[in-house]
Image (cartoon, rainbow, N blue to C red):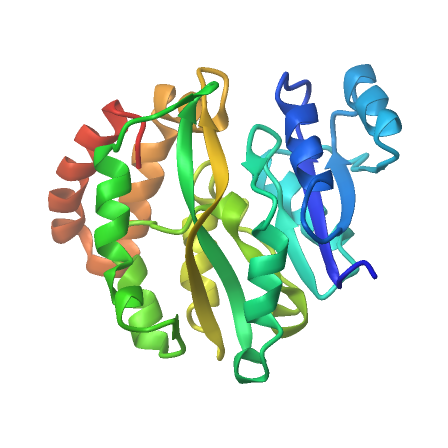
Amino acid sequence: MVPDHTFVIPAYKDSVFLEDCIKSLTRQSIPSKILIATSTPTPSVLEIAKRHNIVVDVNINGGDIAKDWNFAYKSCATKYLTLAHQDDIYLPEYTEKCLRIADKKSNADTVIIFTNYSEYEIDRPRNASLGLMLKKILLGIFLVKKNIKSKFIKKSVLALGNPISCPSVMFNTQNIGSFKFSEEYHYNMDWDAWLRLAKMQGRFIYVKDKLMIHRLHNDSQTSIQIRNKNRLEEEERIFRTIWGRHIARLLMKIYKFSSVLNSF
């Protein structure tokens, strides 16, 4: 039986890595529904989808990244959803391990499950970066707690940065309900989303196994937003909402150094 889970790929234009992503989703140890949601249905995307018998849901209204993610979220009709980024790879046990935890009765109130991951520079494993080390520190609470239910602690995990990798996240759409990523952001939609979801009743669960590979390259949205400085501007805006203007300025000194490394 196909579990109550969907991978929705918010595809944007053509990516040379899209088919690798799709193949990793079809090779999961237990199968899920797979859907492509896009506002840019190029011939290449349509051909790849046809080759793998995947439905393409077209957003005729177009939009930026947040709008594409919102369209992808609305395209899901199952209890669980993963927004699978088109450049990334999901290891075969991603779905099985996340659902095994999510389906426990004690975790019925789960909001999101997210996993550990590896970084690749195109097709080569990346050495430990400053960003990954900082994320491990921010996720330190999960060394003693398997999951977090407290709103205060959930927000605390996110107060000094965003340690949650968006493509690794499995959403419990039934517990979250109707949800939209903020269209005020072009890079930090996910960090803003986790902060808002942290205010909800329910658990954040972290799976410590590395169950996906996040690929970095010059044409990735991470690299593009760093080059046009959107990332730093948006990070300072979020820090101000959490800490106020003065502390936000101090924190941004760390982030300016991190952004040069394209690592956080």
